Image: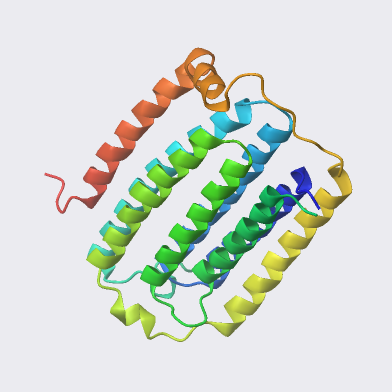
Length: 101
Length: 170
């Protein structure tokens, strides 16, 4: 069967759920961050597929912007992780419970 | 007889999902370095999917920016902070079970709504101009202001990252 729009959207939905699984199930901050990246990429795939099948390039411009913002987000996020590690010597969410009541 | 590019789609989609799964839950290794390597493979397969969707420029950007720059920063930080102690911890079975349940629920909802609402006979039309040329024209003509704001955002992120990682702010 020739892949159509819904094929790409289903791949994107499954990839998004995998990213969510990583964020919810894993306890390492780096893997949680990678799960977030996976979710962003899933949204990108959906946008590119929509842009292709609706013949509208605005979706691709949006994806270009998302990739750039994601790069900035990774830079700041990893800087926060480095600062956290310097202070607490851990990258594990179960050790970071100071905000718990 | 299926077309050659159709087989490419199924291969790349399957590999993307397989590598994505190995990124988040690898049964053999829990090291973040392994996860990062599988995330690079996921991103490369997604670049292949972008090529199949005729988004050539975005496929190049995906490889250069994501697989090249972002993942190198990831690996650099992971290896800079020695995370050996974290690998010995046992994985939380309840968290994996509940996480899998919620991920399955989200996946089921999304796939069901896609199957219900997206028409199956959706065909891709040809774009009049070359895709990359048209994209560049769109980017630099009607989206030039967000583009410039984005450059400021990158500068802010760079300064912020340096400021956050500095040892003492004096």
